Length: 140
Image (cartoon, rainbow, N blue to C red; front, side):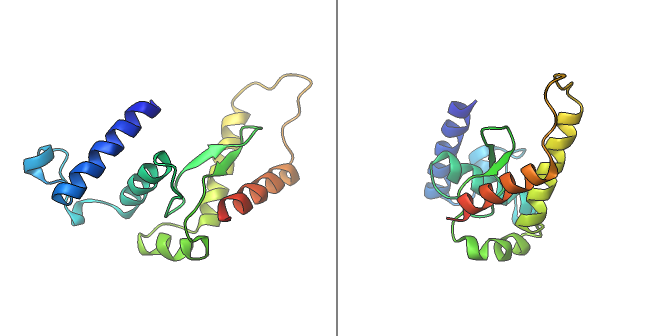
């Protein structure tokens, strides 16, 4: 899957570099978009995906990996002091709210998976500490 993403990201970079934003004549009418047709979150996801697959820090902080315990962990962020301003311009919620949502989704997923008898779920304190550590790493 990663190879497919990298190949697609490379091709997209080539097209944008040579032709600007892909239009109907380049990619077909189903794939072409205009500024009015694309939601801010879609642009943020695309840019961050291309950047993270190119080993560059993300701009909008939409891409997460997982830590050693399987909890969401942010990939590095470019100019982290202004990430919430960039997110707001694209009508995204704050990075902190986004992280809360990711943790909530992971908790829900884990609640739906049967836990081994001798393994207790992570406490809120553990998850908060892990989230704080991941945020600090991403902000560096």
